[in-house]
Image (cartoon, rainbow, N blue to C red; front, side, top):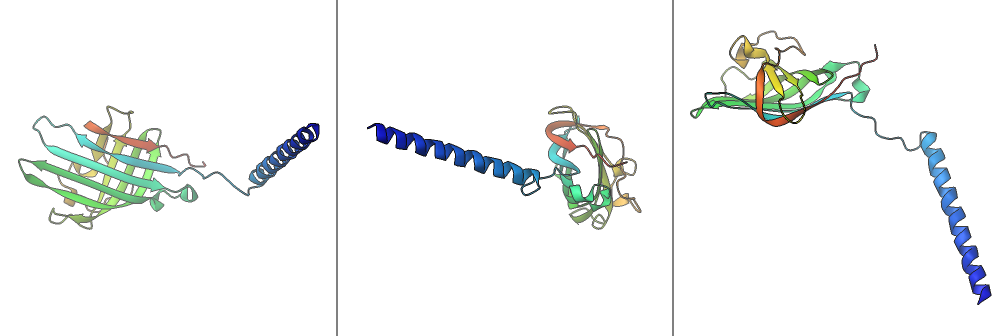
Amino acid sequence: MPRNRTRVAALGAALLIATAAAGTAVAADDAAGGHQRPQREAASLTGTGKLYRSAGDDIHFTFDAHLDAKDLMAPDKAHGTFRFSHYLHGKGASAEGRIDCLVTGGKVAVATGVITKSDLDGAVGKRVGFTVDDRGRHGDRLGYSWAATGSPRDTDNLPKCVSSAPFEKVESGDFTVVPWEPRL
């Protein structure tokens, strides 16, 4: 019986030593760059929100905009999608498109994109801009480039990453902004 205990103790000690050695090897490999943690993206704007309108307008915006870490110093390399719609009494329009620029600072994001699909005549091919102020789970605000012109189709020659102040109140939903931290 004592011989069995000695064997079990020796086997247990060998397993502990092997486990410790393997853990040390993995840690050394990680430190040498063998297994690196994924790098966070440089910036993003994500989420969906419904705007508040006292007249009952049904206005929604959705963003899935990202700037990859490898493109940290090139906000015009942002990618992703956007969608928006505005309806009142069964009339209105919707649009969707691809993001072409994203700049964030703190919890505020400015993004632009080109409309690729819409039921609003003359909107396809137009660049539009959006501004989001992420105030946590409630109270976000949103602005858009056609605030002064009245229609997304009236945004001729809009530069990338340009929009209005975030003057609209988000009634429901939530937007999330990941801040951009460029090397300056």
